[in-house]
Length: 432
Image (cartoon, rainbow, N blue to C red; front, side, top):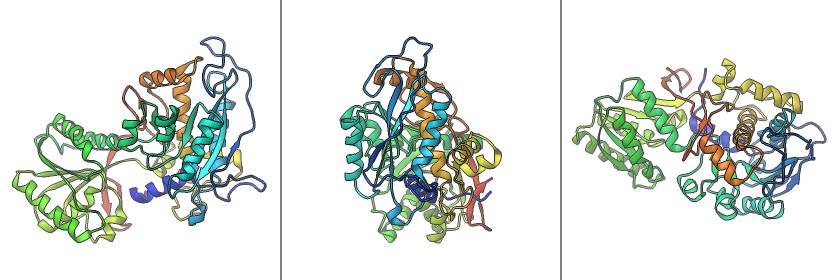
């Protein structure tokens, strides 16, 4: 299985959780930027096992839960990920057809906004929170735009993108993401490296970017719990655009790590690229452990992953899950195709529309919201939703072989990381 590079996948996720395209059936309306339309009401009366349903909170009536579905429209930039509103409708309709959330139907409103800047994203937020008074936001926002919901309007936000450290800290416990957090991805990689016997007794130096510097204490704790001796850490201070200066800085970092007795460097996220280059130039027998599996960057920067002892760990990709028939990926795709009449292009990153990841992201966002809201019971409020998330435990999440929510856990996806190896034939990382 050809493994899609992380950076490319991240771009596709951004667009997939975002863009409207033209694979809709003829006559289907596609929302314009900052345009919000309310879905047709499909609410049916239902009974909850917890007692009579009432209008328990803002956006929650006896028969429905009003949610705002927001996504980026990048069609003006030449990206086509299909009819994103239809993808979300299909995922929501599947929940409603199964009885809704404790008998209440999900009533979606849709809003799109440009990926450039935050003005249109804020306009949609204000429409959802102030004009329509939704119970929760579900969808894709970036650059901390979820703070308009959580911090400014005390509205639950279920994002389908990885949340930033700042947005997590400022969201008053109202932010959730279907993805793993940045820290979560690193902890999964550390677990996998420990299983491979790379950490017990190893002398490990940690390399980080300024963005990921706040993760260093918890990563240190996880490495030491796995039996490693952490010799020190370094944070890249050079701006990433100054490539020669970045290389010079990492050459020094690797020399210092070696002087401190490190035999292994744990390079957080994309710092794995710079660390690989520096170790290769140094010729030192240092093992590198990283989650950075963006093959394009290694190739574009002229680095040979086979020239060093590079150990890459990352979760299984959606295409692999589709081929294996696991994690509900096939069911999500087939549900959308049956609902919309459109075809999902699986396994072809150059397909038009490139709608595979987009379809999965809609299923994942609805899965997470539905699991928590169902556990919250008949009296659905912010407080009951938060309490339900803190005690939810494991649940089924599309395109995740494991998922859970608990107290102080923002990211739901627990898919284990797996070791990857470099495939010279395809210039990509593949499962080892």
